[in-house]
Image 1 (cartoon, rainbow, N blue to C red):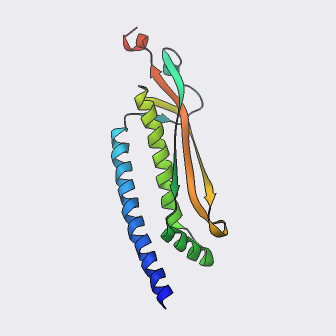
Image 2: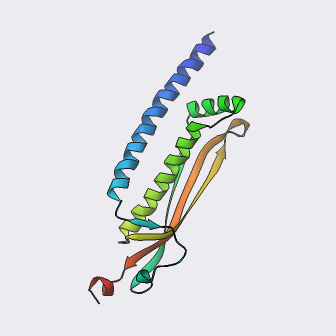
Image 3: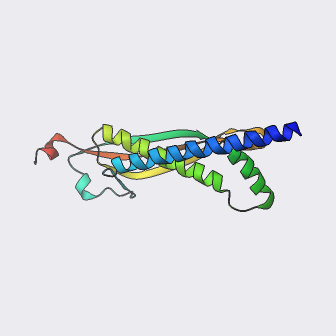
Length: 156
């Protein structure tokens, strides 16, 4: 009986702390997305004519590794028994993807770029816990950033 109570307490703590940190991370994401909204992401493989001359190009990327908390793992295990969407993992992947995009945009911003073309995303599990459960995921976002050259900025 004591083991069951300890299990429930740990489960409740995992849920509480997990929710707190997830909400805090989402708040940080929303604030930074607002700050970096001026950096455009354009999904195209063809470079627009406006960007072919007088722009420096370089690769920018952002990556993040986020681990799964115990409560999410527990809920996912229950969902595997009955089937259906595993929403705790969906929020984990959403946070990882958005964070990777933000880090990519921050790198572009630090270099003076305003546009990122042909952005790609990769998400993979990098750690498997017991019984091959997802332990943590890595998200990577990368693309080609365009920075106006001094010639373009000077009006030539």
